Image (cartoon, rainbow, N blue to C red):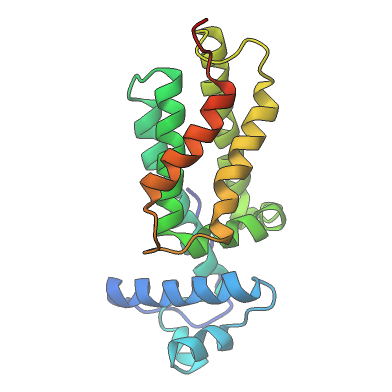
Length: 208
């Protein structure tokens, strides 16, 4: 996945991975709360308890920080999606696994998901973030393909509008990032099970 670069600021130095991850987590919180355009390097530095100039020793720009946040989230999401898609599961089992992995990623990368939902359409027009568009196209193909396979196998209803169903499932799952809180009453797996119960009762083909 492409990574952005920016030579306008002083060259960054190598920092311990743990410190980079800590700073990226703080930056993700600020981006998610305030939006990318409204967020400055100074605001991120303030939230991290450091001077703005010191942040440049770790990252060359706020753009590069956002790039690492989003590409890291998508890299992990696709590693898990690809494992599901390559497992040879039936269409219903594939759909269940994709929904479950989606909720697990919301749990792991809540701020990144919120940023992606708010910013991806705008950011996708910029060369450094072209991979956002590519990921969205791949995402749509995976989910539509699963639904189409289910209809063909008579696992899902023959009259199912797969594109409308895809949009419904996609939005129903990912909008959960607006209310989900890690460590809450329900685990990601339990939420996925409840969602799947509601969705599949509407689209699964039942024996007469």
